[in-house]
Length: 297
Image 1 (tube, rainbow, N blue to C red):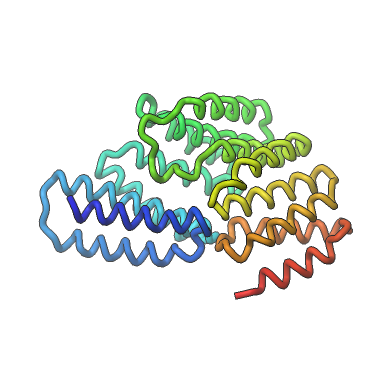
Image 2 (cartoon, one colour; image 1 turned 30 degrees about the horizontal axis):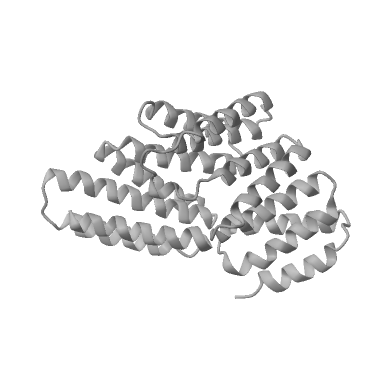
């Protein structure tokens, strides 16, 4: 059991780095660690109780490795890790771990533009954990449903899911799950902002993006803060407030050297390109600074 505890501790340490700086440089580290643990598991002797805990630990590391790969836009690698994680979660009969991985798969689905799949996966996770999950996990899964509806243009269904997420989040978790440490009130506002962007409701998107930024700025989560600035810039650009959008993009650039996440840095590049195409005030200066910062090793 102490060996299993060390596996869980290693996964937690990787997530501390991920929360601060992004997972772009952790995917291969986590993959090698999984191979190491799997090799040890196949060549060691242990009882059924340890075996079940070991399956859960391996599933958690695989879930984390998938997230790191996803953050680096390595979608195929992420899917393979999550598939492996689901197998371990099934062997351990750990439904909460299964829901964690379903949540990630739903997130990947709407990132790839598959709204219907995102909704179906998140709803399956909600059904599977009915009576087992706390308010924090419920809120996250309802957020996933909302994003899926948003990219399909289903405003009313999206609004219902956002409301359910807010209501669920108000219930304090009895025992907070370590992997959900990133999920705060700012994440609720972030999902709302992104959903309003997909629905072309730019005024609401700006309001929600500002609310998200105000929550995340005092925290040490640099990737989340970078994402919040980019999200605000996109919302302001959509609303036609181009000079403010350029300022938000410039604020994001200040954080870019600290974060390794293609998932976040690529939308920043898209914001830069949009501001240039639309002739925004300060766009040229912003673009020159972007090139200087983004090309630094």
